[in-house]
Length: 242
Image 1 (cartoon, rainbow, N blue to C red):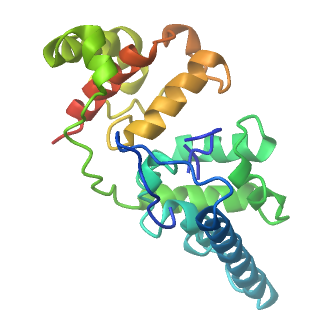
Image 2 (tube, rainbow, N blue to C red):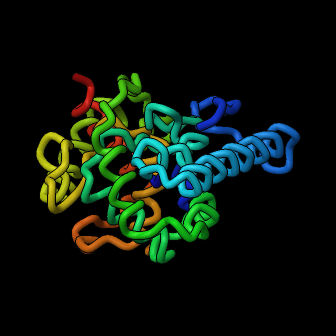
Image 3 (spheres, rainbow, N blue to C red):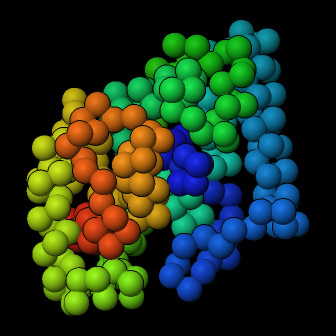
């Protein structure tokens, strides 16, 4: 329900990709219109189900609320579309809860999330329920390893070994204090970075560096350029390969 474009950090169907594996823009195409229409219908169906439950006096569950999320994040919470929609299954409950509150208040702006929070029932109780449901979902296997840096990044570092070493050094200096030495996250400080799409990570790093997304420890994150970002992501993927 988070995570890449605009913070359009959130799969319905896999989109065409460019040569480097990142999603190719389909803005204005019949495919994009059909996809948007499908997501709207899925959200509408979830809303109808939720309303029916309320009318019947049925208990609202995290599983039922999660139907609002499936059109982007999938039934298993694995995200997709090359990382446009992040993996959310198994993330820490406190982290998910905070992101949902930030989306609701638009402290964190993500256009696909705005219609969801216009529903009058997305209150504190609903956010707690769906956060607990998502956190309890098993972490999916995303098959992200090995990460292949772009030719531009390899050129900047002269070799893949040099890139890998630079990424490890950057991670220890800028990320480990909040996300852990192994990238699994530190419960009350930072979420896991492993088992997350490189495209999504790249977008978030860029947004933090540019001030488009807030971070309580932003002063420790630095502002890596494109090659440094790829080196960092290479290291994160290596941390999560097992």
